[in-house]
Image (cartoon, rainbow, N blue to C red; front, side, top):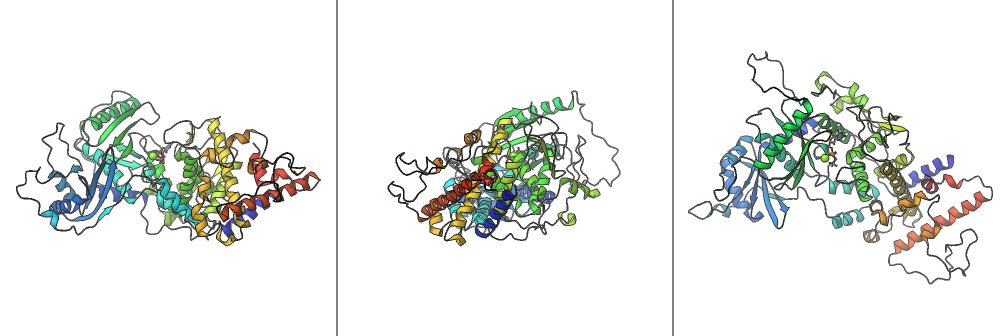
Length: 631
Ligand code: CTP
Ligand code: MG
């Protein structure tokens, strides 16, 4: 065991030397908006915005000059939605909500098309001639003073582009950062999501003036990537904790309301059915409406064609919204949290552990919980426990959902005063994450983010993650035994791959550069990219773990003719450079170097194995690579 610890320590030292930049100051919260401020700011921004479909971005100057009559335009974003052809849109942000409302109110319905006229922030800009304007538009001749930002709000970065970016990084540390920067949901993506929420809210505001459609989940918790779904919760009261006062004398005038005739759940289902119909029949852009009303949390799913967005609308249970706040706070507490989680989510997607549709596999949310728990349980924790946050709650932090679930926790990160002393780099943390879950006893232990430690598992679920806000529930109840086993296999694989990267970097003559020269690295797959290989291309295939063996040396080297001079201990593999086989010419010097490094490492392991077979104290079963083969 000691040799394992020593070896892991050595690897971490190598990692620090060759693959990582020094960790920067961890905590950075000052001046950043709280979750409620973030939500509030984006809701107001949406109120000030309209989306106008145009024939192409060339229409911008004309659109700008036309729309300026309603108010002053602060910003403009152009984006495309690709259907059979590219559809072009411009999002305009006015200085005030009143100006945006004036622009919307000036809209007319298209007499040529049938359909119920509906007021919404989604408009299109018809040609002046079609509008019956007698004189040609002089408007376009004046250039718009506000630059049009052309940016994609939804499409994930092209695989090829990401590959080039990650290959061009200095080291794995930088790869983790770049992956985060290039795949996280951008500002336009967030704006579009808040506009989708506003559309629903405005559509029902006549009858429900206090109703709010609140975005939650990865769209707002800081863990969302480009193209992520929008989770929306529709609330009919103002009970989102954002103030509300209560200082005035209660009114003596009470609204007449309809009595609920059935129990809460079937009532909610009935209401949702009705809202589903309303969205389907009346709201512009809404299509493919599906009602999933039997789920634990009933939802209506739909697609928004002007935003190119998948939306899940729910009406019950605010705990998901508050859970998103917890994740948002965790992301704000330490700059390493989000980049690390992005790499892990990407890795899980690449090896098929996660899947956009729900099923017996681990969800992104559960996986994120695994990352948060890992960061809490470190000897020098990077994140506080949720119990610590709950203890820090002030009266202004009190939030109780209408189902009576207590979602009170300290929300002021400055006041919380949590400072991590952990200086580990992102690449070290990534490796430690994989090692931690390689060893985790999923069979007997449950993960508690409230306590920041593993607890005895209360039932026979394959994976148990205590729901932080509804502690009697298991977040990962859906995960099957087989999928849990697959996760264990894949984290071992990943740890093996990362460790191999460290070893190869340490044996490289240009060790200071990690993985060969800059030009060579641009040509090859290295670092994180080796983690993101498809399962069939992975170094170790999952089914190998079902055999009682580690990687066969013969898997790494070509078979030698039986007649050639083979080693007595490894009869099937050719390790000797003096082999009778014709020499292999490598296109890349760095590949040659890596192969040589692997051979050198394997020779030294074999030497150790021989030593142990001769009674040496070194136990082969304790080397990290052997460890990965044990089940
Ligand atoms: N949630 C929860 N408990 C669950 C599942 C979800 O509290 N058992 C909450 C979490 O706040 C989560 C949000 O609901 O962030 C949305 O769930 P989901 O869409 O499954 O996860 P996301 O975090 O949005 O991730 P993705 O990008 O995969 O949509
Ligand atoms: Mg989601």
